[in-house]
Length: 449
Ligand code: ADP
Ligand code: MG
Image 1 (tube, protein in one colour):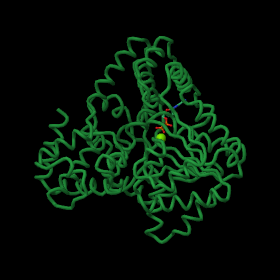
Image 2 (cartoon, rainbow, N blue to C red):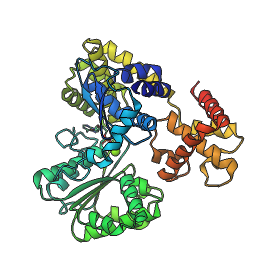
Image 3 (tube, rainbow, N blue to C red):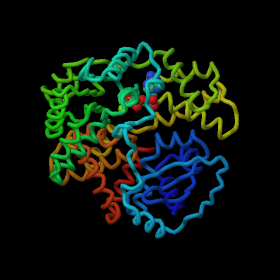
Image 4 (cartoon, protein in one colour):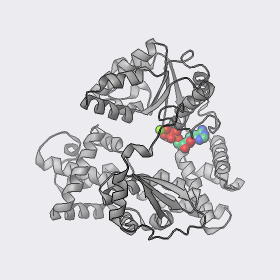
């Protein structure tokens, strides 16, 4: 069973990445819908969590025809026999036995969906994020009395999710009676859709309106979604009027979010708007040092400087490189040095440049079917357009690391559920439609070579 999973993954991931990250994984056991995997060290675990968790979960879920989640354990000796569990049937049985929710119990008073990993202590302040950092601290120290709402915006990987969670964690630390919840705007929307479908709107409203602190991450994703914006608007008003704290993040300044309703935009501007800019070299060095310390990685000064200079701005990337270098050093039992760092960075950059863009996919798919790229992005329901469009979405998901909402954005601002639906449909058809399979295979080949 794990072998099946590995061979499927091998097809989805580049050979180098597969042997570095995936092959060392061992299956330990399965409890409920939770699949326990064992990895040799925490570097590998962190890297896999960041980059491959979803693809592994998807692969296992497909194999066993049921939703699963994976959890990693670290075993230095790595002696778990591969065939400890081999029968697909027994796994399916084990999964069916326990229900989905039992594996996940919410801790009390730790805030709803807050990530306790992100705290102010772990956040390195610098000139690029000073303003947002100070505003966030002020809000955390005195919720609903300083800046309300607090609106934080900045580019990808610059620490918005970290800061907004840190606010929540700090508030709970100071006053454990406050009800704090963290929602990505996607999650907010999904829950809303579910509640609408099952006529549970009262519950939905009650839940959000009973919060003392509402943290909404990546609000740009609700732009253009009428019903979600409407509901969020009412939630906002209810909380604001009863003097509850609201914090919102976005990748853009409110005025620059396309499709954001005017009334929401104006409310976002009621409070304080703080930006996070890309970190300068000194901040990057400080971040690297802190992350290296946290992960028990010894990072020589020259390597720190080299990384801070080579990696443009995205802190998430910076962290990724560090983890990768740490993993390499630990796997080969050699201390980190400048040459090693250069070599690894070079390889990563080659891989990264190979990453295919959605635009490229759209161009290829449109050319293949002799249609226009604009038709792929449109909402026209002609069959001659719908199928190529779904194929393009499917390939985008397979060949890029874009999330569903990101793919939706690139296809003329479609809803992430539309993308999921399209991809599922192609997946199903691929199983029975040989011609389609060839088409998709051809397209993928021409894109990857
Ligand atoms: P965003 O939400 O803006 O895309 P994240 O908050 O997810 O970015 O940050 C990406 C990663 O970078 C996280 O692991 C976060 O801890 C880290 N990070 C970003 N900025 C800082 C900082 N100033 N100090 C420490 N870690 C940071
Ligand atoms: Mg984020």
